[in-house]
Length: 490
Image (cartoon, rainbow, N blue to C red; front, side, top):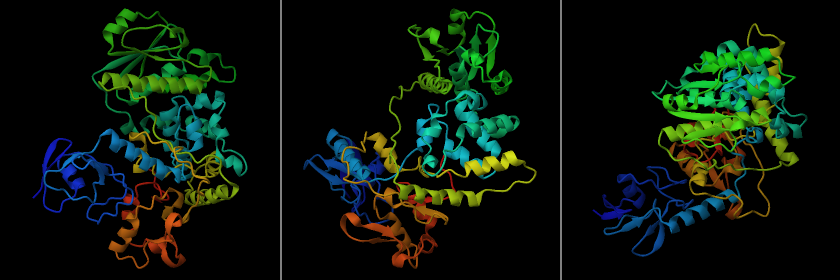
């Protein structure tokens, strides 16, 4: 029974155990993409490499056997560099967007695809909540935002971009009464800490709203008698729309102290954290204060407010500032054939739209417009291990550029499970799982070398290949290659 060390920690394991199993015993995480407990390792991804300090060699932890006296380093610079190279190679042929271009372009990062699909399903209150959660002032922005998201909408390559701005405005104005109580689970219970936001423009309101969602008691201060700041100078914005949205923030538990000068000394003593929101604070410095700059584009101001709230939250929790951005794979401009491939998504989504009784033309037209979404975002943006490790190890998709990028392709677009070969890393897990499940057809590797593909044998449909093991295959897939067509991972 071997005794070895993993990062200096003693591990005593059964004979025949792998280095990966030894690491698990001492709670050391080693990243894997092709490993599944209980199945024979194939070492197809090699991401689990570790260093055997005695030999100086890098070895795959999933298949290398633990040997008495081994000393394993799982996180040295050489190991990290090797893992980064492995990820870069996998990403060089990865064809998929982690985020939809519309969401990526939106400064406030509205989850546009999810909002659109909720509209299609007839879940208008849910769509209104998403708009409120991410934009703070979705109706106000519906009047004044220049809608940069629509310039990135790939539907424009088919006919016209989806009218995203009009849709989030419509959701906010027509479903305001149900928004606040729709998803109380997303508004966390109050923490003992209270925070102050000085300035009630778009940045200040967005900051206060995000802090409220994070569970803080929050008070907004402003010398002016009405909240809104520069938003009240927008000629195309009806003031009753802005007033209603400010009132909804008040109803959500945000306090307002308006119409009198702010005593910074009193605020500093009374509150656990302070955010200065406004252009007039540029260049000023107050100890332990955070800043949310207003911007001539209200949606950018909202983004600044949200960022300041997250930064203050991390500070109050004793966490380090998070400067790293989530890894985001990007396809770029689509070929015409690829656009038509994504249109299959649109047709599939439209077929699932629920008809609701007692609704008017506004409901129907909103569903029709939202149903044009091509679903070009990833179906597994959270569970994708490739994305997780690419971010963790600082991978760069451009490090090993391919001569020609692969094609966007959808298989099973009208079935329960969708397979996107361009996102497949050929780990072989789905092939093993279908074999273990006794599938009559299952999945198999077809072809040789670089052209190897995972397919259902004999050209049969994906549904016929995954009659018993669909759920297990989707859950095991380390990327968004295999996913349920109508399930959201958010």
